[in-house]
Length: 306
Image (cartoon, rainbow, N blue to C red; front, top):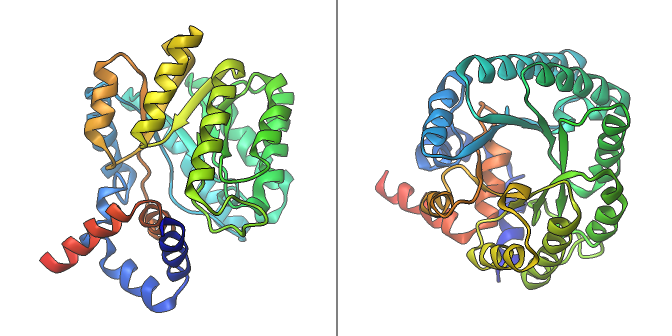
């Protein structure tokens, strides 16, 4: 049922009527729960509140799939400004970005050129950038660009693996010689069963397998999940294997399970909260709805109250 629900939400996301309605009323109905603001000025206080509570953060200028050179340049310039603002505000916050937002649709060299510039800029602030993973058709290009950045000497870069893809285990094996900084997620795009596990139980099982391998072999592991059973398993596994808390962190989304985030911090674990911002929040919001039925119920309650 979860898989069917998720598929229906992601299919609805492309419907013109649904898109128009959600873009018009979504912020009032609940989108504001999942993003830190529509502007950087709005996001900064939200990120500071996270830091004040003992939580790390990352931020993303929401958007993807650009095909226009000038628009891509504006995004790259905006990210440079975001890195400057993070430093000026002394926030404990790094940047996560999508390569199709940096021009991947215009060619890998275009995206890499902007990424390399931003990695150099981030390094001047002692900061880092994580390359987010997009749909399966982008995985090869994303991993090639990550490898290229590492080969060019950039150590302040990480990327992402998605446990719903059959290939994720092989990708991890290929990356391990780099002692990578990896975030592990389940995956939020609509993928065919030829490419991705259709059943949640299989996705979860693969997630745990990959998490165990990462904890034992990666330079640094970001365990991105709100699933308490998986979190408890990771903690028990790390304790059994003598893996220190400095080797991994838990990552969660802004507005989801905030009390769990704080509880983990109180128990001595590192927790990073993804706090994206920007006016192009619609695709991000719809993927959040698809991930958990509880998110849809939250929106429906707001609709009834409104």
